[in-house]
Amino acid sequence: MITFQKCSTTAIHVVFALLLTGCAGMSEHDKATAIGAGAGAIGGSILTGGSTAGTIGGAAVGGYIGHEIKK
Image (tube, rainbow, N blue to C red; front, side, top):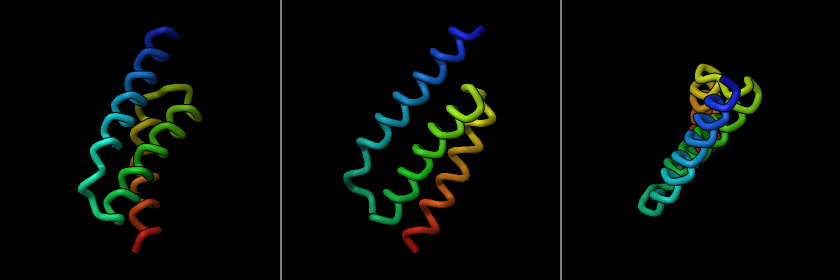
């Protein structure tokens, strides 16, 4: 089970890294939201040992913080 969690966590990180490369046409506000969501997802995943709920929760919180910082 640990191997599956590590693989899924790595896959999530790769997906977020690829999504962030598509930020060239985004406004600064949108970039901050996306970067916050990516960082939050990584942080949530690390803090909860790779749980899906932790990753999604971290992405939501990080996205909100990134959105609010660039107001």
